[in-house]
Length: 243
Image (cartoon, rainbow, N blue to C red; front, side):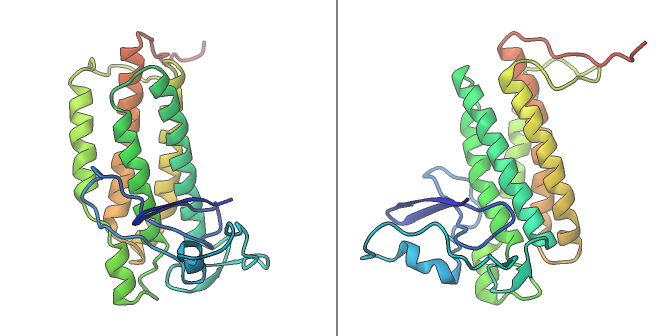
């Protein structure tokens, strides 16, 4: 199910897993990263944000009842299409990060603002994936271009967190407290999202920086998980070969 919040000059939407049918927009905070700024809105859902509408908008449109959904370019594709598979994985990734963020907030971790920004950037990732270049017009591409700046920010965050961590000398298992374990779970979802996006990028249907961002994001989530465990004074479980 999709959810959205309408605010002045801003529209935020979480896309439905497997069904890009209502809204998909890039949510912007005042200090969001310098990626492309735009809100991507499906043509048939413009009424959701129209001023003067009476009554609350309906969450269902029934346009996907026959197993098809629309890309931002207007294509109707089966819901099992690789585009919607990648969108679903990206949405799941954002949800996993959101859960990890809640655990980290409970412990007072100072890096949670980074998780906020990452969730916003994942909206941009989804917008780019939902705009296949083979059917996109210049206006579509202009609204959904994904830049390399978020990748550089991830690398800076990784380097900063790593400075406070001991060298990694053993394989560690997902553990180290609820926040750490949840970040490890998000990391595995990120790897799945990356695998589903890779063929789309190779075919030229999405920006290469989308795949690079997801690749770097899994490294960040691994590092953040170790950092959370250390700050909480928790020991991560070390892999030992079963005897």
